[in-house]
Length: 176
Image (tube, rainbow, N blue to C red; front, side, top):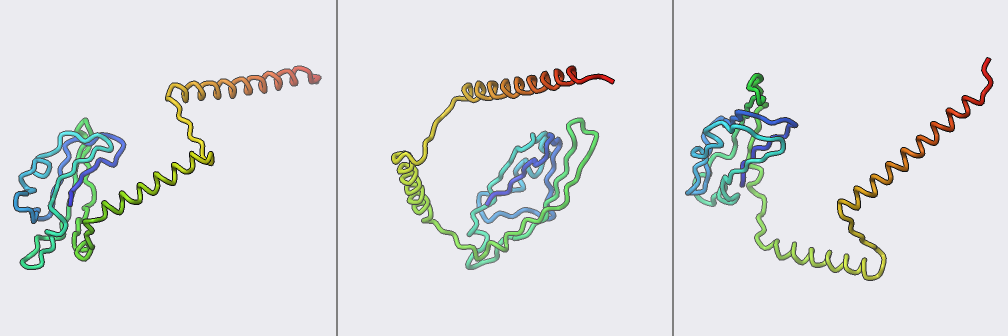
């Protein structure tokens, strides 16, 4: 399990603080989330789209067969400012609830199945190109830029011809 913070906005966020309603408790013996700076100190700046992920523990460790599980529900609040520090924002609380994952099966042998399916896709795609049903051509960015420039040049030329012919028609019409 990971706890992730992402700047989903279009501008940088500064002095980002992540606060929880209760102390985070990880079932991992060597993991103390409270000691991580991301939860104890403000994050100086997060660019748009930036993600900070912190390992929180293995999913099955949150649901021990014997013993008491760690807390499974937390409320997280995020506050931040704009880069100038003039405006402070507080997002609505976000609920982190692990309880719905209690009976979720964990398949540890699914990587083999994924590999088999990928191999099948590779073989199917190979048949497409061998029989001529699908032709794949690659282009460099320079070729794409050249093609786009030629297209827009044609569009401009057509527009100019259209405007020139419209102006010529208006000149030919008798004036009253």
